[in-house]
Length: 269
Image (cartoon, rainbow, N blue to C red; front, side, top):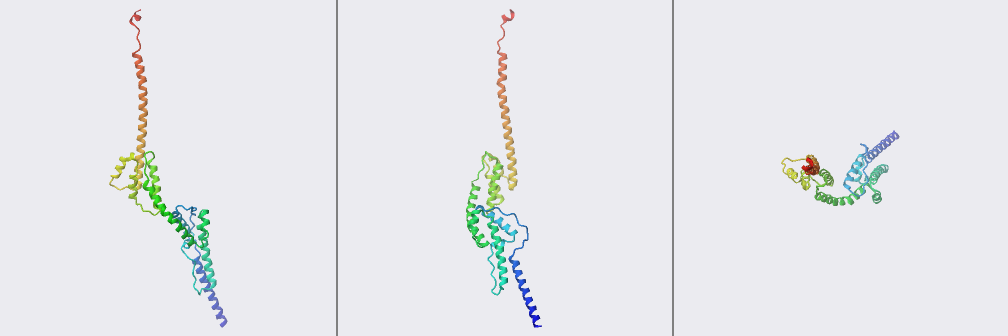
C-alpha cells in the first residue's frame, strides 16, 4: 500500500511538472495566429520611421513583436532545472528568430554593424537610438521643402499639386500634424502668378473646400486655360493666313487695273 501511494504521488508530481513546463513553454513560444505579412524592404539608413512601422507589423503577424521589448525570463529560485531549461531555451529560440528577421531586413553594411547585438531588444533599441535622432533632422528638411515650394507658370499646375501632395505625405509620415483646411489654404497660396485671378476667387469663397474638391476645381480650370490657349493659337494662325493672302489678291487687282490699255489710234487703225 505504501509503495502504491508513493508511486501515485510520483506520477502526480511528474504530471504537474510537465504541465507547468508546457504552460511556460507555450507562453514563450509564439502562436502563429495570422499569416505573415509581406516582408519589408531592406533598410538602408533612410526613412527609419516608415521602415520601423512596417517591421513591427511584420513581426506582429509572426507573433514575435514582444521580443523587441522583453528581457530574458527570470525564473524563481525553486524552479526545477528541467523546467528552467525548457522555458529558457524556448525564449532564446523565439528571440533568435525575431532578431534575425530584423537583421534580414537591413542592408549588408548595416547587417554587419548590428549583427553583434545579443537580443532583439538590444538590436531594436540600438536602431532607434541611431536613426530616430536622424529622423528629427529629416523633419526639418521636409518642412523646409514644403515651405519653399512655389508653383511656376511653365509647368502643369496639377503636376505640381501632385508633387506638393507627396511632400505633405512625407510630413504626415514624420508625425507632423497638418489638417486639411491648412493644406487647402497652402495649395491655393502656392498657385503660380498667372493664376492670380483664380487664386483670389478661391480665397474669397465662403464655403470650405476639401482638398479633393480643390484639386477637381484646379483640374477643370487648367483644362479651360489649355482650351483657350489652343483656340487663341488657332485664331493667330488663321489671321496670319488671311494677312498673307490679302497682299497677293491686291497685287492681282492692281495688275489688272494698271495694265496699260491700247492707244485709241491703234484701235482705230
